Image 1 (cartoon, rainbow, N blue to C red):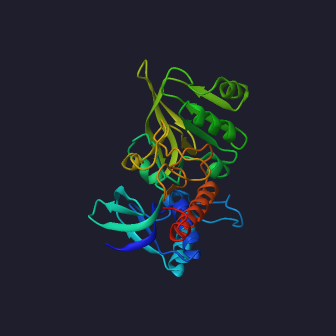
Image 2 (image 1 turned 90 degrees about the horizontal axis):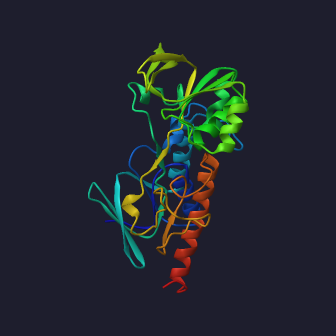
Image 3 (image 1 turned 120 degrees about the vertical axis):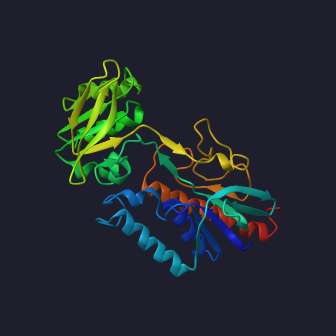
Length: 312
């Protein structure tokens, strides 16, 4: 068991930013990430909306950030955190691999997973034909035809945004109607370059030389299948937070997100949240980084006040 000032659970942009700010405040920091450092941004082949950077890939962003953190003296582990135990002034972060890390503050930056369609070959096309963020990747499909999977608010917002960039946007909704707000549906109806097909379940991907060329979609009533040709597929069928393991120390909302506001505090003193895992309306690289900074500053202040006797 090793002791740290702060343990950050999650190595995406929020967690890495939190670690950077904590390190620069003179704290010892461990980041525990269960998959790969950088988070979901690593799936993006081009990032063009990060301030001060004309263009970079998600992997380049992650690699540069890791080099920066290593230069600052961070420790990193690839393990799966299964719980955080509250021991009062100290917290114990326990992993599936059997490790137990003692620390004074914890930052939960666990991120979210995009719900996928579970189609053959889908994973290989993420970031190369399949995207989850129109704001991030829409410009790559300028004047091209794209499909949007889903019919809720997120899908409709994606389609509206894409309609200002792409020549045509085709919404494929597997239910009998759009389930998003009427205001959004009215905007969709008013856009001439948006077509809506309901009761259409995407059943497969059409590729050529490793590139997405379209999707196959089946009518849920008749079973008839058709091919819809497109250059890109934007999947907007939901996000999946993975916060249940921490529900005893950080309250969750009805959707499973950490019920924390912009302060990034939780119900447990010394435990903070950051990034897409907390309840929020905008989930972008910049907002994740902002949360990382806020949570780290709060955690450092908590530790300093604890040492000064302000926090018991």
